[in-house]
Figure 1 (cartoon, one colour):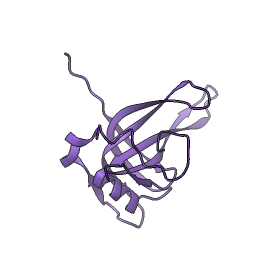
Figure 2 (spheres, rainbow, N blue to C red; figure 1 turned 180 degrees about the vertical axis):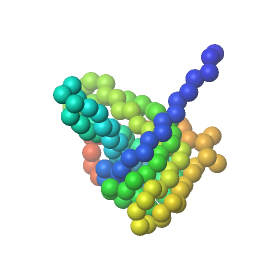
Figure 3 (spheres, helix red, strand yellow; figure 1 turned 120 degrees about the vertical axis):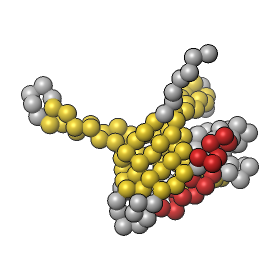
Figure 4 (spheres, helix red, strand yellow; figure 1 turned 30 degrees about the vertical axis):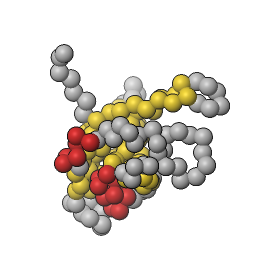
Length: 149
């Protein structure tokens, strides 16, 4: 089989505070959104801004670091791989998909708290999938949404 690469590298600002939950097996999971911006000139030569939103998931110790240090609006560097989760929508019965970045590294950029601080879960990359835990997220409240973000 040929080699392939699944690597996402993003620098942006948090759209909301991380939401920390734990799987039924006790593994910490933090979810947040990250906005990246791109400037371009339109056909008339005027500058336009385009914002792209990314769903980010952190696991284990990296999730705890994200929950403790990241806040809405904070600039952060995120490295990880793309993952896609699918589920059957209970209302429509249709198959739904959501792609997210499973983070392996975070570097806090600027700001007053933890300036220059970083977190990494490289020592636990082999356990990144948590195959027995992923479908069994603990819900913060009653919700039909099977995905915790």
